[in-house]
Image (cartoon, rainbow over all chains, first blue to last red):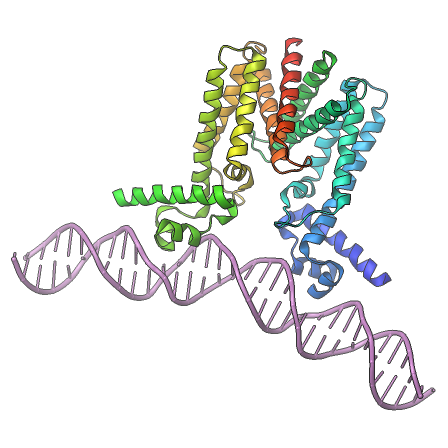
Amino acid sequence: MAYRDKLRANILKVGRKLIADEGLSSVQARRIATEAGCSVGSVYNVFEDLDELIIALNMLTLAELGASLRAAHGSARHGSTHDRLLALAHAYFLFAAENKQPWRSIFEHQLPEGRTAPPEYREDQDKLFALVEECLAKDVTENELRKSAARALFASVHGIVSLSLDRKLGEFAPDATRRQIEFLVGCAARGLQQV
Amino acid sequence: MAYRDKLRANILKVGRKLIADEGLSSVQARRIATEAGCSVGSVYNVFEDLDELIIALNMLTLAELGASLRAAHGSARHGSTHDRLLALAHAYFLFAAENKQPWRSIFEHQLPEGRTAPPEYREDQDKLFALVEECLAKDVTENELRKSAARALFASVHGIVSLSLDRKLGEFAPDATRRQIEFLVGCAARGLQQV
DNA sequence: TGTACATCAGTGAACGCGCGTTCACTGATGTAC
DNA sequence: TGTACATCAGTGAACGCGCGTTCACTGATGTAC
């Protein structure tokens, strides 16, 4: 039992390193087994299949991302709506830039048809949206509208970060990305005050 | 020569259909050959390899997207900045929703390390950004700022559409997505006037 | 303590499948005489 | 018109490789007597 838990922890650690160094496509049964110092069979003793392992890895990343965002949210607690949104957005960008591959894996991995992620996974995601919602609490009192606005802002920042890191907007220049984020958050904050 | 051109056109047609019906991962040499009524070898006579074929297919999609956006931009020509941005954003969403798989392929396909897309590819992309820049011409006179703002807005709308269609923001509901786009464009338009 | 047997996690070779790409061959078309 | 030869696009079986997953076997540990 204890050994099994240690092995599970070790496989997760190795998987995390593989994703970080080489990306999701390097999370392969043989690679995992070699690096974890066990046999392929053992990997399948601990995880149902590779999809389950990848989901577990993505949940780890989601948890780290959550911690980063919560920290930023905490530091900016006493600032204006604009400053708090900007702190969250910058933290998101920073996390994505520093954990590029693990962060990409979250969006890259698609479960096979008909299979669905565990409920905790969605719950972890909702917690991230909740942070954005909190920033909007002062300015948007209506519940549904705030929820929708929070998701829109999250997705917008995600879009900027995502296309930047994939170099789909031209060469990757952190400063350019930061300016785009500031522009977006600036517009949002000014726009919100007038609603 | 004529035959070769016909075959190339046919392969593109078949490839487009495969992407639309089943997604990028179904663009396989054998599938293409079977559906196009030629041999695998012939596919390799017309295209250097599958990456080249996929890039050609993505350029077709990019051209169609460009046509849709230009049409929307044209119709809204006489509207306010807000209305023109909204028209573009809605057109983008509509195109993505109606051409989900081809649209996704543009972002999904990654060239192997060290290989680079043909210059026309990037040019086609820049034309899309140019449309957004035009919408901002009245409100943002400074060149670099307008360019950066246009990319930020494009990426933001892309983020909303992208996460919505991938169901990463919860269930996919077109109306919810439309509201998010309206919220974003509304904030942007209001925010821009105050700069 | 010693012996025989049961249990079960761990193992890794092998299975099954998929897929990009190649290349020796075919057969139709063109050319020279 | 007829014959011999050259050319070359087209073909598809075969190569090479990768990878998820399985399962018959191993060997360590526990149990009964």
